[in-house]
Length: 154
Image 1 (cartoon, rainbow, N blue to C red):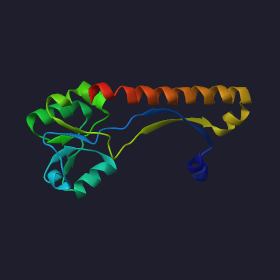
Image 2: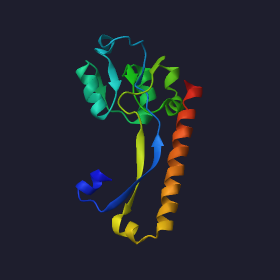
Image 3: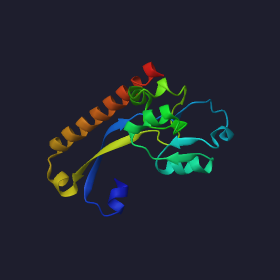
């Protein structure tokens, strides 16, 4: 809330959902030290890609739908995409053997509900409580389901 207020946004912020940690990556070979990363071609995005590049990894930004084919053809040696339960749906485990979890670069993703500040102020205390309770329930549920869904695929 403070960040939005400091930057002049007229919003009331409520965290309403969360996604579990992503994996650090799927690799064809075991990674035991930073030296093992040097020379790899890896699908990675954002600030995480910049860190990997400092470790000697050549990074490429591929859409999710192209990852499996790129691994299969050897165009990339490793990939980071999402959490294990989602990665399994892509079949990454069929091509690359080593998965490192949790991801150091994205421990969680929080989804916020932004309500216009003036509209929030006009809501009754009861209405505000209903919205806050719904978000709290959604946050709790998404966290529990997200965490529980990782174990069977690990």
